[in-house]
Length: 183
Image (cartoon, rainbow, N blue to C red; front, top):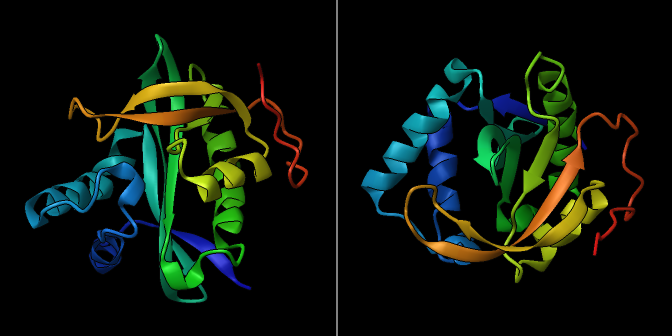
């Protein structure tokens, strides 16, 4: 299985449209209208210029099968990196998200070496999104708590999410299923 990440490009707009379905966007408020989707695509294209993150297409060989990203944000008064992902239905449950997550964590660990860069990577899947929560655990994130999380940012819409955190200073690769819950 040759899974790799490719920085977002104009050619990824088709992938974004394939992700923008009721099934894929069930946990994040449903599909977006075309205008908002195009705005999202433009933001993804511009992310690397900010130095605060990057959106990637997940490729299986040369086929786009999903997306994954990281970006810097303020969370509870602290600068952190946030990640999120999508894998198209025909490719779900086959390890592609875990492979992409592992690759992304390596990229974010490098970004975290910069002076003043955040030292934590957070993921905020819906409390009802069992596959994404299981992936966080598999990748070595620690469950901090459940929280109300605004998504999309600036929308005023809150979703009940789990707050998972990965310490970027810890260079040990995750052992499968070894994420821990903090109580």
